[in-house]
Length: 462
Image (cartoon, rainbow, N blue to C red; front, side):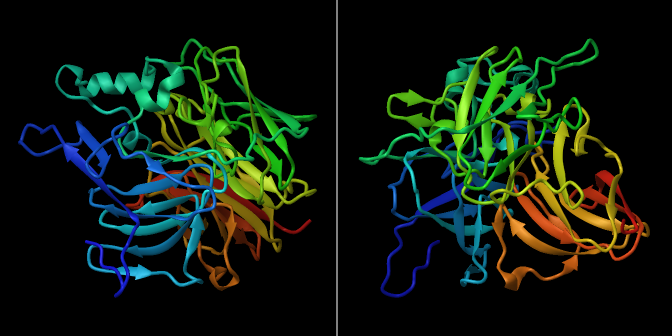
């Protein structure tokens, strides 16, 4: 139900997130073994194909009538959250309350009005970032897959044409938005710094599946995976610096990398089969092949990268990591800048910086530390990150940024260190420990279950 102000008429796209159930347990109760998610009742690739225009604002109203939460992510740009609500009320957000984000968490029963202005042509995805909500549909009739067959497809490979992955092997809560090419538009061609991003061929005799955690090489700097099963090496970029990230695929499988939150051309966004420009589509990176992704980061902040092909298999095999953009000319401050990335490892569940219990981080008291929080799990939309003292009481930190967008001063208010970070979201916090002691960063579920943690030892100033 859309209620417009007097004398106006809405021209927004109304997108209702829906779910239907097609299986029951032994008691006759509905289960989610055979669940289909859709937009306005249709799952991808049958969702409405949206259109945009460079320089013209687009507005969408999203209503979540499912029983699940959905962190909604828009590729290639940011969007403005203009209103939030629920079943009984909808609130327009004023200038101080509006948020500019790459991903917005939409709880069950929640509503959102979002606006964005395409600044370049291409085809962009908007989708739920809970991986299983955009996996291939269960099918019906002769095309129907059992729960076991669908799980095997997700874990062991999708089959089909890798260069048509998005169209053929994704489903559910996903939409495509096409912005036609403008008259004078062209791909960037200026000389660029080159960083090598190498996806390994790495599997051992005890591995059920191979691992894909990449190594990132930038001149003499080599960033290796935190663990064999991910996350991969940190990709370090600089604001305003034209950069080519050369994806070299040493694995035995096709892949594609999405530079989550980065503003870049559609061809380089990692959307295989849909992204690209007239005459050139985004293709999968074949085994033994390579692909140059060009980007010039317009802002400093915390981002992430992850696979966008065979997402469950490759992401749970470590093909994800932190992508940090520093201000122009700045160096990485290892002593005061710290990344906490939450991922999912195949058959091990949630990990923090690659482990259930990550190696102890040692930091100095009396100094201000930047904590970069990232959730790139395949299925933990309600992750809660917090820093606690040895007695489990919460410390105090100050919010600094969300999705690489700095918060206004009015929202940088010191608060207890408990932050909900959903899949596809990043948060930056400032933490100044006043005295030495034992602390830890915890990852907990929405119900408070401890999923992973990393000890933090605060030592006297050096």
